[in-house]
Image 1 (cartoon, helix red, strand yellow):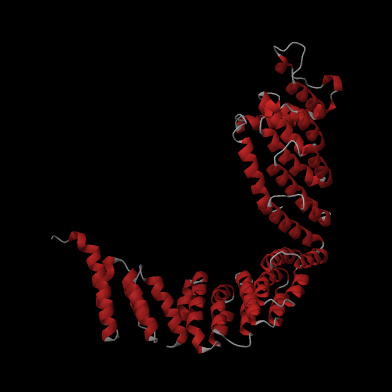
Image 2 (cartoon, helix red, strand yellow):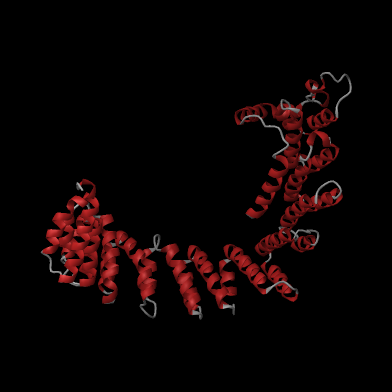
Length: 476
């Protein structure tokens, strides 16, 4: 069941119970009591009826007349001795509430009977909260019985508790009889709870009977429900169905006429398919006629699989009809992992890429090689002739050496033939190097083959940093 029902229960229960119940025993004592149950429950259940534990301690001062609370506890001792053992040392109010909470879970029918006879003065408003808890627990095992019971309690509980109880029952009923759950919706008067419950039913229904669920959704188009709401239902149901049967869901998504909806769902289908059948996911996204949907699916596959299956991802992207800027961007992370896993193959593919893509992808390959074997990475970089690959690889070395070896970083920068890339890296070096290294950096950069404009920009950057760093040492 989705989180909203949990929030509903927490909100209602905290509001009603929080201000009325006395403090419970500490967690340590609860754990101790729980351990005691494990040791005694088996023997307790085997006792003859006349030996069932009693609660004389509660009857002190009352003579032979048992109170309502004591009578209920005596009944509990007969129904479920293990629960009685856990609560017999608590105060009356706590004992009664704990008794009913536990019984809601293990024997809801008996909980309903005892709740009807419970002392209103002792339970106070906690009694109505217990109705909600009982509806929740009972509907998990027998939603029809829970519904029959809650229908007899309209005079005993508030509309808020009634609506919350019906929401639980309807949502759980949808697991077996969704059409009956839909009918039950009419009994929920709160519009917000009604809407959330209907959405929950739809998502539960589509798991077990997607054809019936979508046919029901189609019937809603004849009502006054807005199209935006119907589209939201459909998207939510499809995302649920994708996790159940991605192959059938893929067929439904590719038939959609609404491109925005198809684009959104294509990413979800592609992600799930790639976990089940990666090649099947590649084939499916390539078959989509809507380019935006196709690209959305490709992006999701790459995101999901680039770390675990870099070779397959790289090969797939390189077989795309056009090598676009997006293809290049998607290759970056996959190439880094591929270089770590199979350096020879990654280097071979890098050399066959379009020249415009080589610097950025060379950065990825360099990072992958450095992570795997720094010595081999340095040998490979130093073996590169001036050009696009060396530009990308040397750029990585500049960034890697900014703090540890700034003068060495400048030497790497001087190997870059792309002036725009080199100038940017030298500015980054001047901006992020340690202040104590700035004078030496300035001298080294002034000996570099920079244009007068670039040299002036970097000089000003270094001087500004030096002023800011040492201003506190200058005497006014």
